[in-house]
Image 1 (cartoon, rainbow, N blue to C red):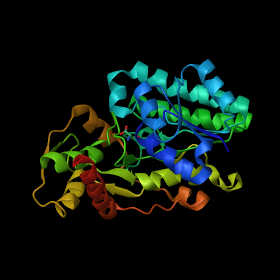
Image 2 (cartoon, rainbow, N blue to C red):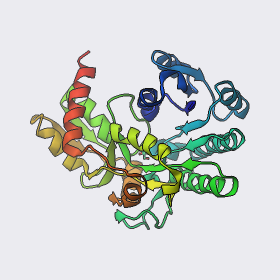
Image 3 (cartoon, protein in one colour):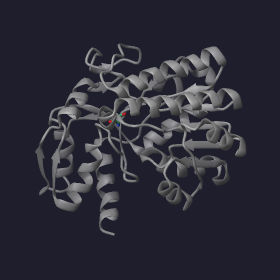
Length: 316
Ligand code: SER
């Protein structure tokens, strides 16, 4: 198996690379990123190349050179950043996807492209959001992700390309920072509390959103891609979640460890609107039934681990 991770320098890719290396061998994983500084960082622990996923010629050369047969397409502009420049978000998110789909079709690669809770909108049931339900998002990020799910299923049914995907909720991690997402607060808070003792939250205190801790997110990426395709009723894309909490609940959990931590709220209008349109909690039973999704981390265990990991980082 030769695996290419495109957009590898981001929050997910930085930790997916070592996870893939441990499962498939170091030589069989290639990290690709647009930014030279990310490639330099990735080269410290992996085979890494500079690649603009929108440049199909360059992308094809990398797929051919390394005889790639599985692609993780992690290229994305996230929800809050997307609203600042919707056309750029469309070009990047859809451009990287269509090139990944076309190259997967030509070179017989399996393809994983994350979808998101961003596919849902105000008209979606917010409690126990079903796998198959209304998807009418009101962000450009969500519009791209719904389009991406449809295109990926089309490439599977029309051309037989082995496309699979999960709808990631907010991902909490201690490696690379997320950037430009609505759920980023749940990562930022740990750095701010450990460095300054206080945090001002851009999301209203009682807004619930689904979340995953990174080790569970990584297992979702590989368990789904490695499962027997005969098991799959759905493909693009599966609801996955491990916990659902509001800022207030997360901060109460942090205060169990750091009682002096102070929290205030200054809701950001764009992030508040986006978070209000997303599910409070998704139903991920299809993922559990079809390919054995079974997350291990919850709010309490994640908070304890994040505090320990981020303490090590900020005290350096
Ligand atoms: N974490 C993403 C965002 O907030 C959701 O997919 O944009």
